[in-house]
Length: 297
Ligand code: ATP
Ligand code: MG
Image (cartoon, rainbow, N blue to C red):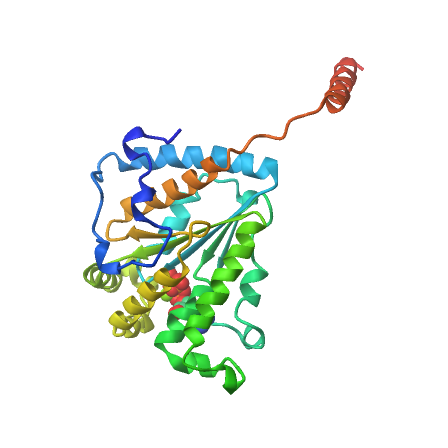
């Protein structure tokens, strides 16, 4: 059951299963559906409790794994969404990896290599804070990154982005066919809201540490990034690996949508605790008896 009937299938509104006609302009970063900030804390708390329960079953069943990929412009709220949505989860069942600019060792391999090493084990939820999708975003916006990848020049053609989309699609289909549920979140923040958040980071001494000059430089490439995001979502949305274009101008709403998307995906797996067969039940009864007999010894 969803935590609140009025919020049932909230994430469905932002889910893209087929990118053929996707347009970023059709999605409003400031959308909050018909919910209000007031009361959102209780809704999120209920979702977190539900998520925690589902994650226990995922872990106990030990068959499926869940990969949540987060991509966004700076200050869109990736870190906060991950922190809040996962706050009720047993840390043993959840793994978070942040992908920064690749190291020399990583550049000596294909771009999926570092991510494959971090895929979640069965029974776990894995979070990618940035991912192989940077290969179609920052690397596309700044071709100098591509030049550092030691690729044989004959492979760097005008088709490289289309090839990357094809390979990512195949990779995610492979994951899905092997029991990894792939959920991808694009936190869609507006240019105006990003400016406001950067200004807060500059003006509030407690937030100064979050400010990075490089982020303002990247803001200068806003339109290039939006085009790259749109193209990425168009080319890599699939029923088995959907993108969620999550409105990100209101952090409380972003978190509700992300939580609901993960809950819906886990719900659809119909997870059950492993059952005990008669022989095992007999063993358990014996252990129970033995422990009871210890009393007073
Ligand atoms: P925060 O700033 O909230 O700590 P972040 O995800 O922005 O989180 P940073 O260390 O600031 O972390 O940035 C990571 C940087 O690494 C980003 O600018 C991103 O574009 C870059 N990056 C990630 N993957 C690649 C890649 N494959 N090639 C080049 N740059 C990459
Ligand atoms: Mg950053």
